Every structure is written in C-alpha cells, then in structure tokens.
Image 1 (tube, rainbow, N blue to C red):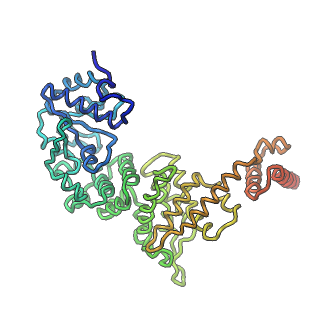
Image 2 (image 1 turned 90 degrees about the horizontal axis):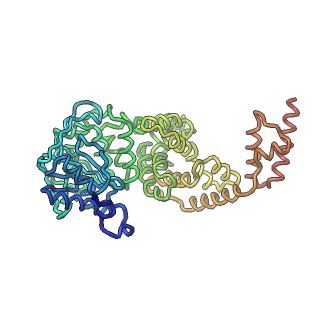
Image 3 (image 1 turned 180 degrees about the vertical axis):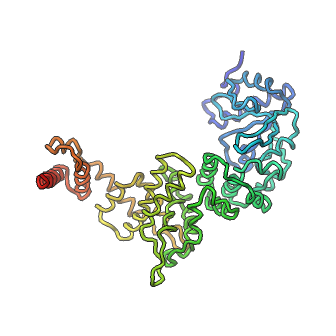
Length: 471
C-alpha cells in the first residue's frame, strides 16, 4: 500500500514548517531512488540560496539514472503525483512545493518561451545537464543524501564574489528572458554582471518576450533586492530600458532644480527613491504596489519640465500630467486593474504629504488628503521615500510623525457618525444628478468638525435653496 505524505516525512509533522516538510520529502525520494540505482540532486535556487543562508520556498530535485515511468512509480508511493510536464520528465507531489525533474536536453525551436524541443536522458552527465542553466550560480548541484556539492562552472566562487556569469555562449541566448534575470540577480546579490555576460545580454533581442515573464522578474527585483535601482541601471547600460520601460527611460537626462534636487536628473532621483522605498517596503500595506509607485511617481516630469526665462527649472503639475504615462508604463507589463489604480492614485497624491507636513496644514486639509488616498499608510511611506531620494539631505522625522498623527485624527473622525445618502432621503431630499455632490458637501462639513445633526441641517438647507432657485 502506498504510504501517505505524512509517513514520508520526519515526524511529528505539526512541528515542521512547509520548507522542512518539503526537504524531508525530497530526501525520502532520494533514499528510494538510491535503492534502485538512481541519484537525486538538489538544483537551482535551493542550492544557491542555501549557500547564502536563505530559505528557498521552491525546491527543485533532479533525479538521475531512472526512467520516467520508474520515477513516476516511485513518487506515487509517496503521494499523489502531479504531472507538471510529463513529456519533459517534470513531476510534483500534491501538498508540496517540490518540482521533481529528470535530466534533459533543450533546443529552441521558435520565439515563444515554450518553443523548445526537450528530450529526457536519464544517463546525461552532470556537466551536460547543467549546461542548459542560465548562470553559474544557478548551475550548482547538491546531493540530496550526502550533501556533496557539484560545481562544474565556478558558481560558488561567483556567488561569493556576487558576480552573475552565464554558463554557455551557445545555450544562454536561447531564452531572452535571461537579460532581465541577469539584471534582477545582480540587484538581489548586490553585485554585478560579468562583462562578457553583460555584452551578450546587450546583443539579445527581447522584444518577443511575454510581458508576464518580464513583470515577474521586475517583481523579484523590486521585492527582494536591497537596492532595486541596480535592476534598472543594468538594463540602461545594456540599452534594454526601451522595450518594456520606455517611460522610465524617458527620465534620463531630464533636468531638475538643483536647489531641491542636487542628486541630478529625474532618472537618478527615481533610482534613489526606489532604494529608499526598498528600506520601507516591509511596512507597506501593498509592497509591490508601493514599489511600483516609487518607480513611477515622477514619470510626469519629462512631460512637465520647463526652463523659465530666469533659468529656473520647474515641473508644475507633473503629478497630474504624468498619469497617462504612468498607466501606459504599467499596462505594458500587467493588466491588473486594481494595482494600476493604486499606483496612479499614489502618483497623483505623492506631493501632498510633504507639502502639508512642511506647512503644518490644518486638520481639514489632511483629512481631505487621506480621504482621497486608496492607502494612506503607503502614501506616507512614499512621501518619505520621495523626500529621502536626494543627496546629503536627511529626512525630517518630524514629517512622518506629523503625518501619522494626522492619519490617526482622520481615522477617529471617520469613525464618528456621518451623514449618509439614506439620511438625506429620509429628510426629504430626492435623489438626483446633484445627490453625490451634496453627500460630498456633508463629508467636507464632517471634516470641518461639525457633528452629524448640524451637517445634515446645513446640507438640506443649501440643497433646497439651490434646487428651489433652479425651479
């Protein structure tokens, strides 16, 4: 009788996290494979991240010396087999994050990322099998039972030096996504790309990639790198901003008022803001949206920037003028409507918190600002990153303290009874084209500190008078 998933792992299961469960299951597979002459190797990210002391969520196992049907039969003894690509020799087990594959050869046959001729070869050597990997840091293997590290391409040395280097001149260009993977790994490692790899990437055509794959690499850079700016600086050196990030690329060379922006052009400011945002993203309600807002917040400046007759550089209204550019940049990469609206809202409002904090604006003004925001907490963080994205100008902590105090005030005010549409109807105000405007008027009175009863009387008086005048 096949043993259950629980029987395959170290007990007691309830004391183990998912990673421990998957590792125990992987070793159970390795033991059974060894019993029939096979050898199971950890490959890819789990080996790389293990050397860095990082826990890898997805564990890839490559099993040598076994035919596909034999491997599938072995896996079925440990749980329910999921065929993730049976013709490619890739399997999984339900309730795990394991990918169990067989060594294989790949040859590109078309432009799509799925256009590969794949042939499984259980007898393939470690060197031949690892040659299809993208970078040396991802081509290492570790024996799932003994822990022996197999490093045929110098990946361990490159990892220690934080260098992203391709494995093969022949196989690397077969997947153009590797251009963006090189950039995001360089950002995550806080290192650089080998000159020969960067030169190869610069020559590659990336125009046929699916935007979903590019967006995935962007997300890794934004959410996993301490300095995500390295992702975009690398793409700029490779001349690969133009295909998927033209609006970001348009910020290069756009001058700013040196009094307020001694760091340089809009691109440089954006990169500094992005890195400041990375230090704050752990506090964000929506980390990905927050990081995208940091990336796009000044996309209006290339359109709004002017040099006045006195030589002063201005970009008045860039937070509004840039909204179409922001949407175009995002829609090039994703169709997630809620994410796009979140980022646009953040862009629209990003100037206001620091202005209000500097001027110590009245409570009504800050209440109105927070009411317009889809996420006031993240807006405060964005304003902090924006103000911090300058050279030699420390952020004034009093700004965030002021904004947080005012956000608490806004929450308290919103918790008090307010005039609703039902209240207006019950008081005899018939719905009409102006109904939403009167509801907003009631909200503004509420923000001014008036209680519900007084606000209701005021709105009814004004509405009846205006309607009466029209009639």
